[in-house]
Image (tube, rainbow, N blue to C red):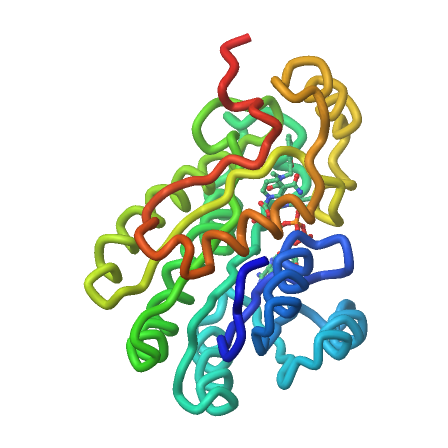
Length: 258
Ligand code: NAD
Ligand code: 0WE
């Protein structure tokens, strides 16, 4: 089990106990990390506060990643709580309009195209930039984000989210270059389908699960906890020389051509 004793972390993207961000947070907290959390919107505030309390989190605050002010404030608050230092950043945020995950990608309107890229890709850049001075003060840091194969290949219905993940994946590489000189590492985890809030509402999710069971080398699903374990590795000192990469937690599905 990775050791996060004394590490300070900020976690973006917990909506409920099924969230991938929560599985990651639990692993970090089990390893001794102190964690601040952000949530989006009043609807999930109480639930996130309850979860955060179970890991003795010192801070929970609202953050809509579309707002530069929110991102700057949230990181500044984390800095105050953690004495001007931050070691870990978990970015587990994505959103596209539901209607754009159903029809044809070709029909995606301009405003919703940019909205999906804003929330799902630019937000990593904004958060990394805000976190940079705090991580530099800590002598370095580690950032992890969540991606999906639909950013590299066309996955039916993933549509504009795939384009957003392509931008996210590329951003990981450019951030890794910029921030590497400050000993800040930036990596992604490409997860197979997991039944979270964001996934459950997608029509055809059961079909996708059936395809994984048939075609993935391991012929089974992954869990949010599998992602938590992979994130713990990437965020730990065991991965001290790992940056700019994508770790697949998908039962091997990405390795197949058919
Ligand atoms: P989730 O619904 O639990 O998490 C998504 C989070 O994004 C929520 O907490 C939501 O509040 C947040 N969010 C959306 N818009 C936001 C905004 N404007 N500002 C701030 N936060 C906002 O679902 P999840 O499956 O845990 O998703 C987390 C990440 O994992 C996403 O990046 C998703 O693309 C990625 N991912 C999910 C799967 C899967 O099958 N579930 C697979 C691969 C990658
Ligand atoms: O990244 C995702 C899903 C992200 C997501 C989910 C929703 C549902 C609710 C982004 N925006 C929204 N907007 C909503 O209104 N995944 C990797 C899970 C996922 O979603 C798919 C998938 C997979 C896998 C959509 C179509 C096809 C496959």
